[in-house]
Figure (tube, rainbow, N blue to C red):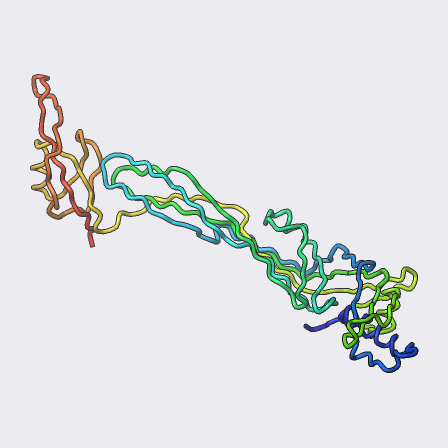
Length: 330
């Protein structure tokens, strides 16, 4: 880390050793401070964090940046088909906090970072505060679930795709955070070689402990009037998260090799097969199937169709199913 401001626990222990060595009495003079144990009581010491100051912020909103899911619906019949489009997918929202300068307590950072207002307004779903314990920084990750449950209608002889797109936001900024340390600290010194017997008890204002022991550095301020020490932590924060989902439905070309099913009365099937280009639907309507110039793969009788003859009489004509492979013109 570029600028470590010091460790509070190491500072208090160092202060306790100095105090013990300078004030030995009686049998204590035979003891070395390096062979003793130091239990620090922080209960009456408070560390308060101000609202951080953010600068050099950069925000990028990328609509439809992430495709979570895509599927195709192909209708090879001569009737409109409705398909269910239902799925759930997950993405990760991340907050990457890098610390360039801070103080520690027992080797761990003691930073509570309140998030920028822009992040909260964009609705990334983050907590209002992030507790950073690693002196170099931390990455916070959490899964977000995206669900869709809708219906896609596909016309006859058509293909459609449906996909879920996510709008992604990337936000980064530098930060400065002031932390105020105040209160009284207690230290119990014991002798591990004598059944952890109590050797000495010390208590002092944390302000005096830090000022007398820790070398002042840039980023540290001593307030004599209030008996407070202010540490200035610095770092960089980067956030990445999805904000909203969009379902996009598109018409797609039919691929080679998709079998198309047509129903014909026997009155029309002959001419259709003779031309080797099958078109039309039941009842004579429908669209031409462009580019189909191959032999049918299958012809089956599937029922009958009623038509009116010249004199208005109904005539039952057999229906056949003709399955044709689609091959596009090259």
